[in-house]
Length: 162
Image (cartoon, rainbow, N blue to C red):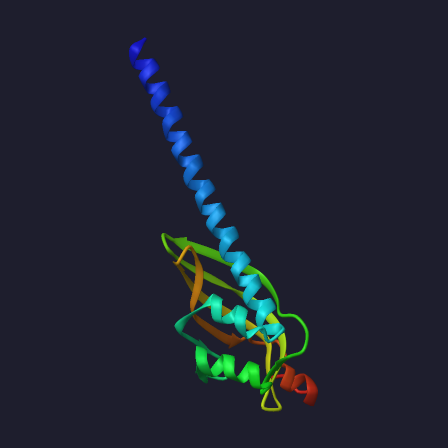
């Protein structure tokens, strides 16, 4: 009888711990997704102050065309108006993987962006890495690539598919 009681207590404890761990993972996923949404809203509205808070100082982005910008360059381009978003950035098929104080977010996005008068953005796959710092999630790197078989803003205008 004592061994059954001990086994039952152990099973309840294990279930409680598993439930708490799952809750922590779900909470981290929600928190990271909230920052991801803030990122998209801030860049769509050229909210440089919000982006400055969301990105670590040594953040970099590699755009779908292969160019890489630092945080300072990206924010300066938004502030100067040389990088302009037309409308919202939408995402789908988003996956969040949390590894302690690091999170990897991947998915697909659509946006219409002009950079120095040239079309950018469009239908992309992205990967972003976040870390927990100063009580919140901060993005440390972003990388995008063009989705194959999906016309980009540039090819749609010309009526040509890549």
